[in-house]
Image 1 (cartoon, rainbow over the protein chains, first blue to last red):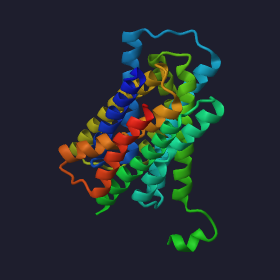
Image 2: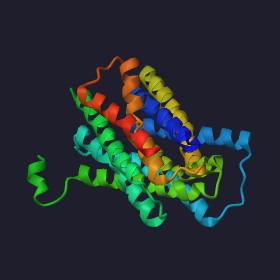
Image 3: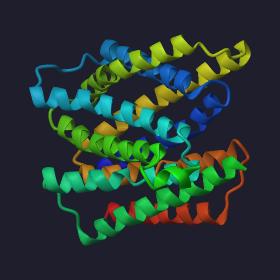
Length: 145
Length: 151
């Protein structure tokens, strides 16, 4: 088993758990307040990392800007997804549509980073997106009833 | 409602959804670029720096609207939101580490995007939600996808 796959699966598991905790949170408070406390937790975690890990510095400008842009893009994406739901989008359609985002990552990575996917991996990427859509559609349809 | 406006302009929800695809799609790319030069901890720190302006904006919005939420509900909601942030942050560290350890953005992004499979399983186990045929099919496909992507 590839070591990167192990970490990817860990990310998948932790993010998967947040699907439940986020739902429990927004059952009690607004999505905006929930997002705010989500951010405070990120700050707390970063402070712990800063104290315990003593990260290595001395970085290139592109790398620093990319990492900062990562936080901004991911946070803004969460915010725009809330706006999509709040502006009348049917949850089952919005969530399914948003599930297509890895397609863009794949396209950008192939075009800009010159990554190469094997035929099997290409099929896997398409199947992954189909799976994410199927998982999302049913969950939201149920939540609406 | 949508029928009346769709002739002249795209519905707002569609534009917000497309914006989300662009933002999250680009996130996978910049994370890979960043992971080539920083360790996962610095990446998480800088990620939080990038999150800060939006956090300030949302904080201002929440303060301005000041919605009246019952205290017990609010405490519970804040607890779950904070836990979501911690788990999300640890998930980020694992995501960054997957990229640092040689995972390509074009593979890691589709694999990690399958996280709803865990949500669905937990919703069944903990929230006692029922799983329909479509979700079972989604779960099955998710395992197939992980196998194919890791080949």
